[in-house]
Length: 277
Image (cartoon, rainbow, N blue to C red):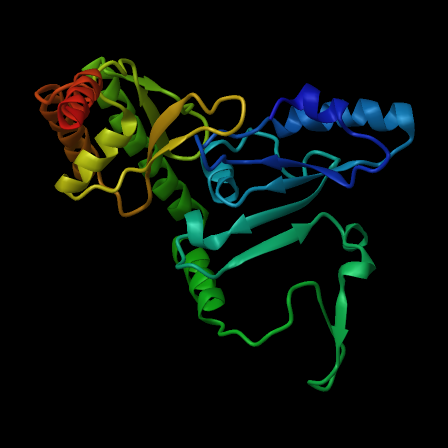
């Protein structure tokens, strides 16, 4: 998201500007501070109070440990709410996530439900249904077990392994790196040369080596770009990172030995003509 364009679109009906700290597509952190500064100016000019919500589903457990100097949270005055997913980089299995507000006043009363069938008034702003507490317990355990330094060590290890993959792919000379160094520990990359094969074929061939590396097109205005993405988690070791680079190089050599896409199109066309005759 371009901060200038986003704030330019803000009007009197805008509820908030939602910034993403860790894009699903390339792991990028959007510039929350720049959005905050622009909103500060616009709110002063208009008298509005347009706030920021930060979708830190992935980045909320990364930025505090890898980039403590990065201002994206409640240090910025117009950031009013933040959501985080524990099942991404909180090291817990799926089913845990939360949203926090700067102050109680920033959570509108209209969003709060009050129930009393358990004997006392219990305000809640989530969907009201019964659910096990295992994920909450697991998250609490991980926070206590690792502490700040433990989480920092894990995130630093993830980032270092991402750099191993990035540098290994760059050495092959075959790929453009689409992701940035600052962001979610992942590597998004695309082929430099599409004359013979594309990213979807690379993804398909990697499955034969036991790797599931998704290939996908980027969103509107960049849909002509196709990328492959490798997300680095705690259990992804340095050995696996080095092995993945070797397997990608092997796949590329195998693809080079196959007919190119253009040749296959010509062969298919000739085959169709022969059948018609």
